[in-house]
Each structure stands twice: as structure tokens, then as C-alpha cells.
Length: 563
Ligand code: ATP
Ligand code: MG
Image (cartoon, rainbow, N blue to C red):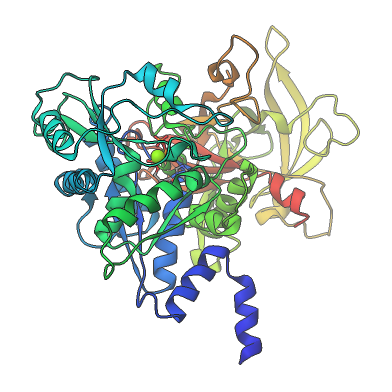
């Protein structure tokens, strides 16, 4: 029994350990976590990590998770973002408890807390200019100086704060500050700003407020109001924790749950940027087609690209939670989508760079029906019929006129297998006036139907192909990494992250596919044999089918891991 317990303990991460201790000690009967996005952009893969962590923890321990929009900044927020965030969380497979919340729901309560602090002599209205504020703050090595407005009477503070609220004071002229310690070694404790005057409309509270709480004053208190037990956030907030605790010390009721803040390292991915400001810049400068461009690291971008919720959740589980910042190799994420699609995507044949093949010994008006396996990993997916005729397409790369020694695919005088069809031998190359190969003339061996030779004859290559007489054209969007540098934020002097954009991150081509691939719906996923996994784009119509390449077949991660 004890032994068993210890083994499970070892596999717990540090956050799960805290939760288990809190449940075991009776500190909490149940846990309530939250995901608190600021609605100023679309969610990205880093947010997905945080979502999986918060919702996953609650699921594991039978608790619940709130969704709260941190809308304390009136200017930058947008209903479009609120909706996209909810859609993305649901798509990932999670459901928040009850209705979603907004920090702005608590503006009245936060105001009361501020008044309470003023009444306790713990907050004051300060009239320093922004320049003076930073000058008075000191530095990490030099203590700050107290504001001359710090010792106003409680009555004067109350009356000025009310005037600020009522719009009677000009923007920038006054602010409410916590009275803590200008000499604290923690800069966040040097009388931080709690409220500032902003005479702008808020997307939810309209013109009701002329003052808005700072994030640092709103965030911890919002968690407290909702009864959050474990406030999980990223490492940069570790240094804010003493301030959040100080605020709660002033306002918290002894009988109410006090949230415990736990920090973990944010997710960084190679070849990827995660800053919402920079992602917005990509959208606004039309470097990408929108927030859901399949090259974007947004959840909606990954979805459109063809990633599944499972693959993202499995990735988040695999990377776990760390206490120190690091960079995860983007190929690990690719590994998880390959794993998923290998199991679940049906196979089809498509030729993306077609070269015509004429089977000279195949009757002109004949068509053969052959059987192709839909998914070798899943027998229940069955087989489908494909057709073969005198004219086919193969991949241009699969033929070389003067091949190097290690090239085992098609060349003049060599026999190869066409997948699920026959062995063919190339006899002749037809070129146009520029010397470019436009056609191969081959013969087939009827005895090899289905792709097996009756006499045990071996070939060194199996090629994918389509029947040229029935193949349909589709648009195929070949995506590559959006950035050429592992760390896109690493720039030369005078340059920006935009200078690290990969100019070849999207190539649009027309491919030839099995006719079945034109009766598809957006988000359907297929493996194009030997080429990669492809997902039907939302732009796709019955008239013009569009595929996004989700990921190639080559698995660099398995190689790294030695799998
Ligand atoms: P901003 O700079 O606009 O505040 P943000 O990345 O902090 O950007 P939020 O909307 O505030 O975005 O984040 C919501 C939640 O997602 C927060 O709890 C934050 O800690 C978490 N989060 C954001 N980025 C990452 C990341 N890269 N890895 C893990 N968690 C993240
Ligand atoms: Mg934030």
C-alpha cells in the first residue's frame, strides 16, 4: 500500500503534488482552477498548454475550471477574440464550469476593495507624473523615494478617489497607489499603482468607469472572488506573488478560500513566436492570411492545418510542467500529429508533381479495377476500388534518366512496382523541344496484378500513382515553417522578427488525385501515400477542392528519440 503510494507520488508533477497535499490535509474538499485569457488576440499553442494544465488538473481530481476573461484593459479588447477563445477551448475538448466570467464583472467589488484599503490607510491618491513615478521608484540596487502625496488624510484620499471615478479628474493627473514599502527589494512592492484614470469605453461596461484597475490589482482579487483554490500562472508572475499576497492580506475574509498561486515555465517552441503582439502584427501586415492561417501557432491555425485536439493534448501531457524556461523542439509537436494521423487517417493516392506514363502494352480502351487498403494500421477501415488504365501519372521525382547509384526508383530499363497495381518497366523517355521529359513509355506485367510477382521477382521500389484518365485536379497548399530561425526573436541590429520570415513558407500547387478525394468535407484528413498528411481546408468547395499539408511523413523527432 505505502509502496504503491510512493510510486504514484514519483510520477506526479509538482503542481499535482501540491493539489494532492491540499486534498489530503483537508485544506480543500475539491479544487477550482481557472484559465484567465486576456481577450486581445487568438489563443496560441502556449495557451493550449495552460488550458490542458488547468482543465486537466481539475478533471484528474474531480474539480472544476472557470473561464475568466481578463478584460481590465479597455482599449485592446474585442468580442471577436472572446468568441474565438471559447470556440478554441471547446475544440480542445474542455468545458468550463457554468457561465464564463469577466474581470469586469468585479469592477464594483474591486472598487470597494480599493476603498477598504484607503480606509485602512493602505492606499493613497498620488499626483506624480509618470516620469516622476519611475524616478521615485528607484532601481533594483537603489531604494525608491516616498511620494509627497503618500501621507494624505484618509478623507482626502476617499474624496479624490471618488472624483477620479466620477470623471472629475483629467487622465494622467492622479492614480491610486498601494502604500507598501518604497525601499522593498521587490520593485513590485514599491507602492504599485492600483487604479489609473482612463476615459475610454469598455467593451462590456461601456462608459460607466473612468478609472480601471491595473492587472496586478485585479487578477489575484478576481481569483479570490471566484473561490479559485489553485491559481496557476507562468513564471514571470512569481515576483508578483508577494504583492498579490499583500492585497489578499488586506481584504481576504478568514473563512473564505484563499487562492494559492503556483508558477510554471511558459511553453516556448522552436521556429515559433508566441507573443500576441507579434502575431497581431503578422495578421495586420498581411504576412499571413489571418489568425487562423495554417502557418500560425494559434489553436485555430493548427486546427485548420489539420492538427487534432488529441495531438495537442498529448503534446501538452508529454512536455509536462517545468520550473525553468526552455525551448521545446517543434518536431515534438509534429511527432504527435503524425502518431494520431497514422492511426486515424485513411490513405489515398495523389501525385503532386505529375509525370505522364503510357503503358504501351495495355489495351487502349480497357480499365482495371484494383483494391487498395484504406488504412494498414486499422483493418476495420476496409478497402476501396481504384482504377488503372493505359495512361497514368507518377511523381516526377520518382524518375531519373541518369540516376546516381543509390536511386532505386524508376529509370530506363528498370522495373518497379506501382502500389496496389502492377510491376512496370520503363522503356523510353519522350521529351519536348526544350529537352524536358514529358512522358515515359512503359510496359506492365499482367501477371503481377495487385503488386505481387508470381515468380518471386523482386523490385526495389514501390511508387504511388493515379489513373490519368480519371484523376481530378485539386489545389494543394504546401506549408513550411513560418520562420527560418530557431529563435525568430533573434535579430541583427536594426532588424525585426519579420526579417526572419521564411519566404517559402507557402507553395500552392495543383495535384492529381483519386476521384474519391474530391468528395470531401473541410477538416477531413488523409495520408497521401508516400507524401504526408493532408487536411481539407475550409476554403474547399465541391468545385475547387483545397488541401493543406498538415505534416510530412518524415519523422525527425522519432530519429532524435531513437524510436
Ligand atoms: P499578454 O502578454 O497579452 O498578457 P499572455 O501570453 O500572458 O499575453 P494571456 O491571455 O494573459 O496571454 O494568457 C492567458 C493564460 O495563458 C495565462 O494564464 C498565461 O499564463 C497562459 N499562457 C500564455 N502564454 C503561455 C505560454 N507560452 N505557455 C504557457 N502558458 C501561457
Ligand atoms: Mg497575460
